[in-house]
Length: 340
Image 1 (cartoon, helix red, strand yellow):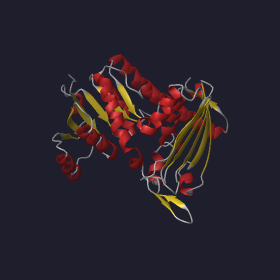
Image 2: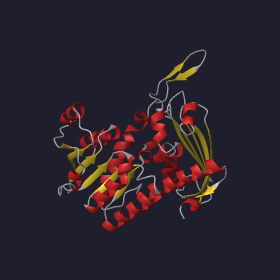
Image 3: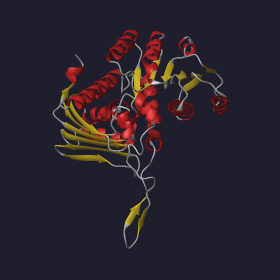
Image 4: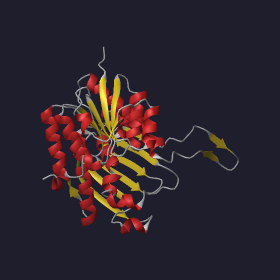
């Protein structure tokens, strides 16, 4: 008989609420006991009441100190992730944490050391790995169906830029946006990145440049298994949320295209039309958030190590830092230059 896990969630913002909804409706054998958030207003109280959540608190320590809670879901702001992972690990609670663990390498490594020493399981929320299309691409590569991977191409384009105030504190496009694509590239190549060359420009909004960032970027990756990778990003694709992955191998090619919002085609004398692709990331990836949580709790049930894990998060941040250095110095940068 499967064990029931008692869960505490830290962070009840947009992503936190998605995780809470999935825990309640879609993940079996879990009991949500406590939700912690730094701001509990009337709106959050009303929402929690509708979901049957009776224990709301502003103190995350209540979750760590509760002996009944087995698992902590961390969906709070990035700067709190490492601290909360460490506290949960020391309290002997398994952790699912939104990406990234941190943007400081020393802090990440310190956190992973504590996780290892305490023997708890840690999964980091790179949800795109759990998109059903990208999972099928990975299966085709990992099984050898398309032979040895040679070229990995990723297109990841947002429909509109985030607010300038967010840009100023985001850590830059290579950290806050391309971080998903570094992870996807490693996942699809079935190999670690050895070198990155990144180029970028401000082509959409001069204010983004004034805030110290770029809004359009391309990166070329070299993998340890010999494969090459190409990633293109933009903060604004006017036609929608463009998410595509392609892997060319020695025996063939596998490609995951955008999904239209429906399967309808309109045929006329002038043209054939389909409706637009999704505009917002939640439209595109909502299912993947539930799938990743199911995978995490399935690992706990079977005493297996979940992926993506802390080491994956570390590698993704290393690539992001190498990309930043490459862009600034206009040269290829090896990951070993960053991870000394």
